[in-house]
Length: 262
Image 1 (cartoon, helix red, strand yellow):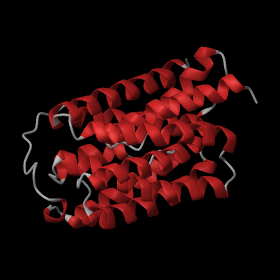
Image 2 (tube, one colour):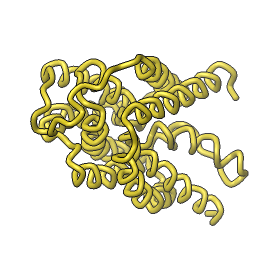
Image 3 (cartoon, rainbow, N blue to C red):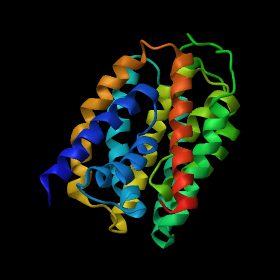
């Protein structure tokens, strides 16, 4: 096992963790493309999509927990959202991660790319922020709809090693009409619950390469803490724009690989 490869993974975890805490994304939306393209570009190692999906799930678990702690302290986490959407996401992730063992890597990549493109398009839609200063416990939303979309997102997310935060955020902001800051904080909680189930599924099927996963986690935990503290100081409009741009770039790059094989 080469030290440069492990150092690269640690640094990627640090960067991915920071963005996770800042934007409320579990980290897979960053880590999957980073793990696929950065190590071979530096000449230190190479992963296929199935390996990336497995170790990114462990990274997401650590990033979401670390970021959740910060956002909970800042009072941006709704317990109701965690209960209704988090549990459904966990169920879907467990089912999807178990099923992923039977699915080809190219198919997983196509699912991830499609989900990313759809999410990015939605995030570019202008929206006037409603109830930005409302306490998390007073947030109102359609719970039946929340349960349904959470099951669907969790299942597809579990298949690609991504609990689906990059889909949850536009759904919660635009469909359920939840304030952005509460969405960011609560999404990390949903992702954490889903990542627990997803990681169990990946472990059960022996897909996780633990030395690489641990290297990612070592960088991820402090990165997410820093990102979470920075997030509360940034205007929500810019947070939504940053999320949209990152998701769009990732989705388009994935589709480029699918269509060209590069």
